[in-house]
Image (cartoon, rainbow over all chains, first blue to last red):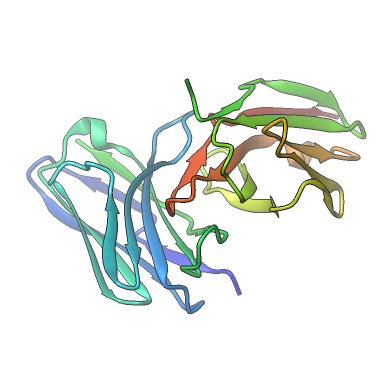
Length: 113
Length: 110
């Protein structure tokens, strides 16, 4: 089973709202990732958690705040977003070993008004 | 200079033909190479991974890796309209990150 789940599927929020995206995997993976993808562009890495510790932050603005409550869950808290933050947000996971395959969830389509 | 380069396409092939997708990368130390398929509005789906020089076959898909030339390709035999998608080449940069190419849009015409 290589399933990563994400909720919600779609999210519309105003620039003053606070919302959270949720990602879950039950494959025993120890690395989890947040990506942002704009139309016609490849996924752009935002954060990496390895063994529940933040290991990579790609200089993402502080209005995006990741959280890894346990090895199966990954959240992305959103606050005071801008319209240009509208995108597909993808979660992925991998075993945590070097150079292993990343499996993507279905994504959350975010629209900021 | 981009670290992973792909022709953006669109690449158009007739149904039943072989589609050939190409990717070059700049980091000679890269060890892992991945091909993902992404349908419009959907998330990337792993098609193939390859670690060693040579060919790796899985059904209608063959991945080819040439580390000396820093080149990886994906061949799709007997292309079907359902193969129409964007194909993303991704390379592990040894730092726990995948570096993606810009993707090649493939269109298979009935």
